[in-house]
Amino acid sequence: MVAPLYNSPLTRPLVAVVDDDAGVRGSLDSLLRSEGLTSIGFARAEDLLASDLLRHVTSIVTDLHMPGMTGLAMQAELRRRNCPQPVIVMTGYPTDAAREQAMSAGASAFLTKPIDPDVLLAAIGVGLN
Image 1 (cartoon, rainbow, N blue to C red):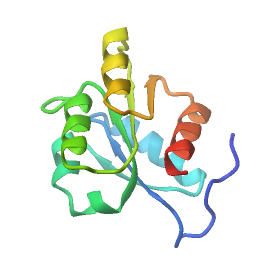
Image 2 (image 1 turned 60 degrees about the vertical axis):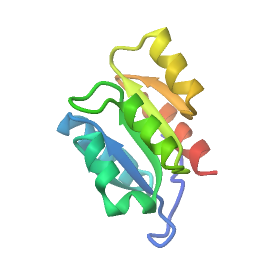
Image 3 (image 1 turned 90 degrees about the vertical axis):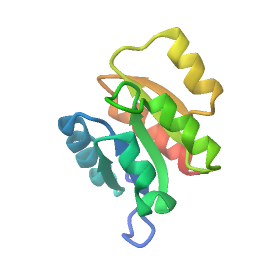
């Protein structure tokens, strides 16, 4: 496991986790908390986009395939709104086309589920620097 990135609750970044699977949101919340980060979960991309907390989010981890708006569509909307937060896309069904689309649209990482915790934490760390 990687050393905690942040120790003070006053300096903890807020990581948004967008995934329709409550188990994934819960697991990622536990992982992020164990590393000194704070997370907020959203079951739908639309919920994050409508949230007043979006402006406080420092990094976004999103599933690719979700009911309603996909992770790629959310990424495009964030870009349209000029949101500066890095986006990490994750999926259990990776394709070269999806990887290329996410990365060319500015994703900071494209990860395959099950997620390697160290790889995710490194991607979040890169996005926060």
